[in-house]
Image 1 (cartoon, one colour):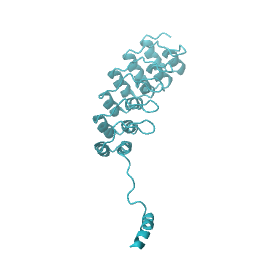
Image 2: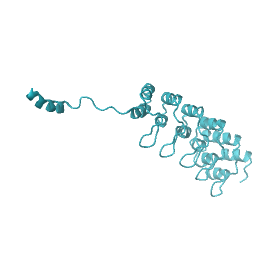
Image 3: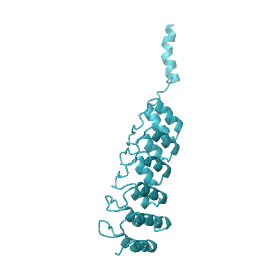
Image 4: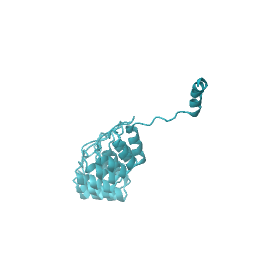
Length: 221
């Protein structure tokens, strides 16, 4: 008996731990969101995970799922009450990120579950501004339909119309976005912080079709 008592610690050390510690429910929830595993999300929530718990970067499970465009996972979280406006350390929220990246299915989930249309990103811009810049036509259309302010000015003194011209490529998508913005009432004369107008920027870049749209909408300089 004494010999076994002496040998037992040695045998356990050689065998390693009998059972490794399992992550807590919050960590499992975020890991499941990162994988897009909807069932694992349900399980973690049933085990008491905090639906809006944050990781070290301030991201909730819903924002993590949004980063991966995991629609089913995002739907489970939203239906369970996840905050679509919860921002991380760099001021992204599920709503803002989905809008900026053109993730239209998740964007729709956020819009139908309380998205704050006046919330802004770290540049002081609404979701509409980066969507216009990146050429996400359907996203711009949906955000305008939802009621996002068309002439909001960000910290760079740019509107969605200015960004579509300044940072766009003048191609068909940006041409369509300029038209959508103008149809929604965008001011074609609203200049940037240096008093350079959308028309002047379009002319400088050789975007003749955009220039024509702006002139038709009343731009004179």
